[in-house]
Length: 385
Image (cartoon, rainbow, N blue to C red; front, side):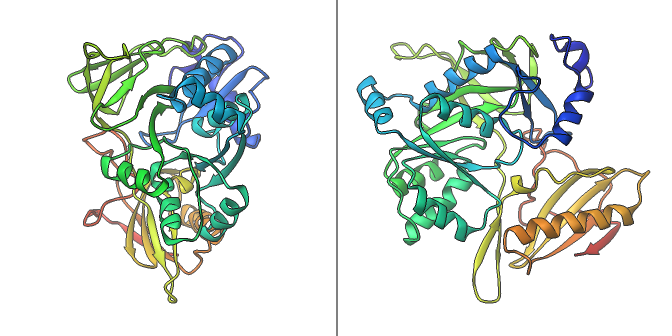
């Protein structure tokens, strides 16, 4: 991002204008300047960045994404599925220029399917109402979000007759994969992508590992560090670009129907969910990516830790040049609005100012949600909300 203007190829692109565009224009799938698809990273490894795809790169990526979504399906099955006009629900963060939301929307348009976005900020009662009305048969989204839908199915709150479940955006563990397969009685496709290249690979079962799309990306691993060279995006060329995911590469097995490199031991981002319960026993969740856009001048970084059934702490790292009182006021206002949207206005939250928030040394990514038992020892002041 520091050298964006030097490295980007089109002369009519610059980072300052992209940031202005992102701040002023509400998020949608319309190309920037009519020809560039702008993806906003989640910022899990630091300050959110922008990755730009021109039309040729975007279309190449969409073909790769559709290939992954239909992986291992025969042509008769594919034709039968498309003839029935699939009804696809996408459950994730949908109110920003996240690559998944934008790419899934364009891909669904491309195959003539019906679609519904279900944002993770939406209250559970709305999930139930919308799922009942839409009756999806294909589910795409964060595995942690799909798991919540599976639990609603298990409890009998909704009925979903899915032919395929596509997990993306977070790592999918073997136990969660098994749970989703049993809950939906459907194949689960684990799709691997990143803002830097939205189509990286696909996994149909944990034993075989992730198949990396070598025809779209060149991935290297040296001393445990992953480097990406994207082979289809020439607008913003990434050559040996360091990715903080951790994996081990294995060559294609002899006799394998696929000539692709396999990745095992993938460690991407996998955030916990904050669950809360009111005095009557009603439960509601807050997904960390629902608050990923929590942004204000002077707030450098933040993390969360659950403090009880109806409370959580927010650790904040701020610039030394800003007023804590000003940050406090803005944080309280933004967080109250987020909690109100989720029917969580009974939840108490506390702001703890800390010196520095560091990434997880195992993955290089900053966990938004600290695990139980983890806490900060260098607390300077606490603000209750």
